[in-house]
Image 1 (tube, one colour):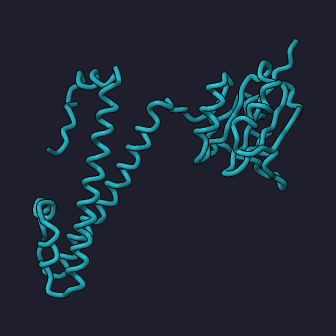
Image 2 (cartoon, one colour; image 1 turned 180 degrees about the vertical axis):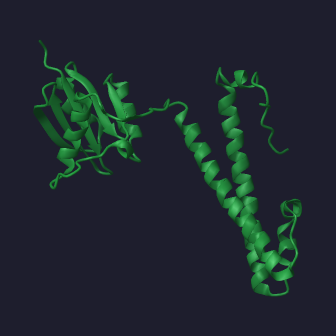
Image 3 (cartoon, helix red, strand yellow; image 1 turned 30 degrees about the vertical axis):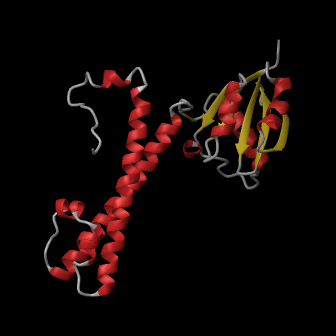
Length: 230
C-alpha cells in the first residue's frame, strides 16, 4: 500500500517552512525555503503522487503560493489560523512545528479551512475592498467637515450643500484662515475620493457585466442596475 502524506506550509514574508507527515503521524521531511514557487515545487514533486493534501496558512501573502500549487495539480487547502488553538500548553513552538501542526490537523481531518476565491474574480473582490476603505475615509471627512461648521457657526450643513460645494466656496465659510484651510483641504480630499470611488465602480461594473451570473441578479425583487454619475 502506498504511503499517504500530508504537508503543512508555514508561510512568511520571505520564507516558507514545509513539514510532511504520513497517515500514522510520523514526520517524514521538512525544509525551509525561499518564497519561490519553483523551490517549493522541486521539494514537493517527488512526493506528489503520495500527497493527499497540502495546507497553506492563510496569511496576507498566500495568493502566489496557493494559486501556483493548484495550477500545478497539488491538492491545496487554505488553513484558517483564526480557528486554530495552536500549540496550547506547548512551550517550544517554532516554524517547523507550526508546519507539522498544519499537516497533523489534516491527518486528523480537523483542519479549519478558508474559502479559496476564484483567482479570476479575486482582483475584483480586492478592488471592492479598496472601495469600501475609500468610502469610509470619505465619510469620516464629511462628518469632520460638518462638525467643524456646526462648532463654529451653531448651524447644521445639509449634505446636499456640502456635496455641491466647490473648493473655493469651502474656504470662504470661515473668517479664520486656519478653519478656511481645513475646509478647503477636506473638500479637496472628498472630491478626489469621489473620483477614485467612481473609477473603481466603473471597472467593477465592467468586470461584473462579463459574468454569466450577473444578469440573473436582476431577476431578484428589489435589485436594480447600479447607475454611475454622468
